[in-house]
Image (cartoon, rainbow, N blue to C red; front, side, top):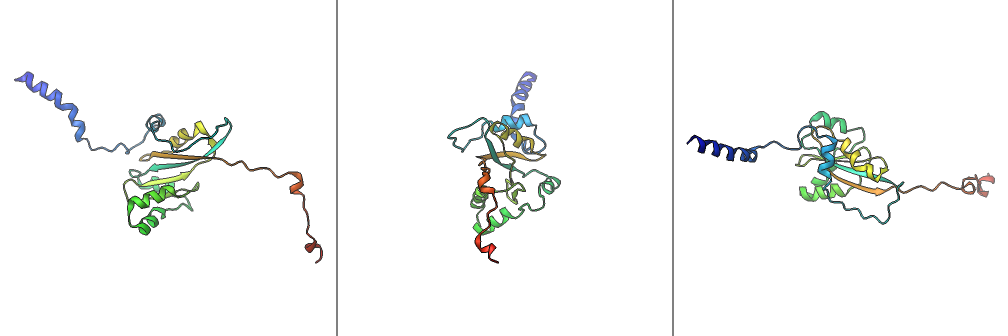
Length: 178
């Protein structure tokens, strides 16, 4: 009887994990754990050519559902768009459509939020980086309660420096007539 009870206990112990209602988005996540988790993310980008020195501009999307108020406040820099998700949700009256439109909207380095739904999202444009530095940079930006969920990136368009002929000051005849 004792052996049966011990065997039953040993078999039931692993199933206790089924009743564990802790959320993996809570707390801090190390950069290494983030890199391991994001390695399986699907990539939508299509690369025609990749030059080693090319810079890419990333857009990071984070799940901030479990982030505390102080973290959200810290992410909400002056000029950030705290109402982006709310406006889209009111316009469509459907959270899945609003979320899809939010994810399609361009963001700047100040970021934008999609709050009041699970998952609550924060999107922000990062600084231009080499291709192999983008995912680690996104993982390093995480704070407690944040999880990197999506990364999009586009090649930085190099601006052409004007030639000396284009920069010479030419005054029009109309300005000389006055």
